[in-house]
Image (cartoon, rainbow, N blue to C red; front, side, top):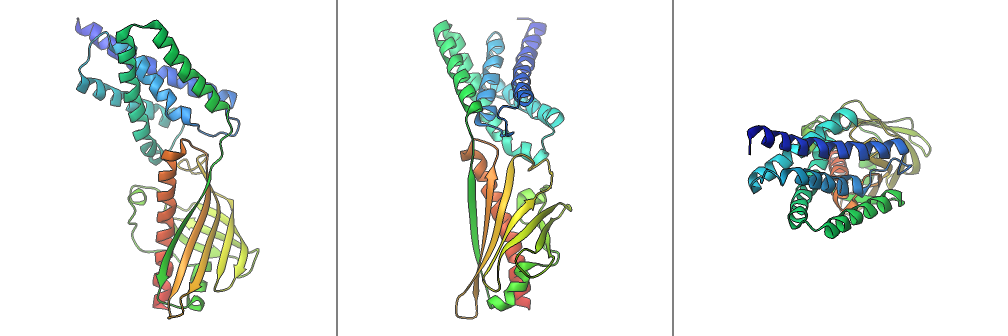
Length: 304
């Protein structure tokens, strides 16, 4: 086996697998399937498996050892992520989140492909590709909807009356970010402003990079319940088209001993699937937004 043949075969595996992914994703975006812009399960599972199988079709000819095979497959994944950044304009942190999923199913596809092609069983090969195609089509044409609630609570050494004003609006948070995604660049909650202290008032949640969530107070029960709907959210590449924050809520429960339990609730809708993977990230991010805001409210209230 010559060096030129080895390198050419290796590059073909990288190029053709990414070309296939580019064509599939591009066709889906052009045809607007799904029509609501949802990023379906198949994009992150079936497409990487197919990419791995295409690479395996070429790489089986140069008999790569397992370590080299995994290394080149990871390189293939990095190339796919780079292309997503350039052509799909995905955010860096978003791509960081998706990378474990991409790498896992790329590697699965490569080893599945090698096993299939070594057997040289055309019926098996056709059956596997047909199954993947059917799953892809059914998934792409199916309706996808997922709404979830994240709830957190904290005990504050103050009465509901002392806490309430800090729940409705608060000055800038000066404390450094603890959450690792905030530390590497994801915007964190920084300040909240309000037009007035009444139901129907406008409210703004301002993040560290200046992005603002516009809100409207829909329940205003002093010292008990502040509920607000999200009217609009920023067009941030890290969240645009991936998650919608629908509603937020703060509940105050007087513990009768000079302390208050503050409960923070947030409702959101995901536009990326599979849920079993992306909801882990969504819960973590929403929960850490809660924690940062609620700890700030606690600090302000206990000082006051």
